[in-house]
Length: 153
Image (cartoon, rainbow, N blue to C red):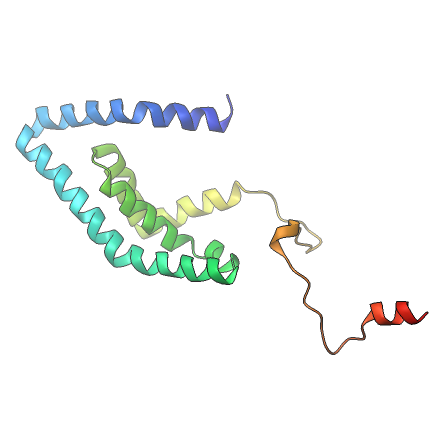
């Protein structure tokens, strides 16, 4: 199976897994304490999104308005913290555990390095291939315009 099928299967089984984890935690510490932990983690996720996520979202908005996506790609830490806040906001112990892993700086760097390595390999000749919609031509005023020379010839 390819990655998309595994991801879909994981997303479909997440609610059942979260319910099973909640039942296990509630059986261990009591329903009220387990429910309180779920509420506390959701509030923590909301506060994290408001504090750390707000600045990252505003940086994303400015970068998208300017059409500069290189700053977004370099800022993996902000995206990981934003994802951790979203995962904390979702009620459940499994998503909270993954969010806590993303909030621990050494583990976050290790996870981000794994995802960066899984991308397409960099070319050895230093050439960066871009899609046509990712670049635009800006004439350099210090260089002669070859189109004018071709029109004269």
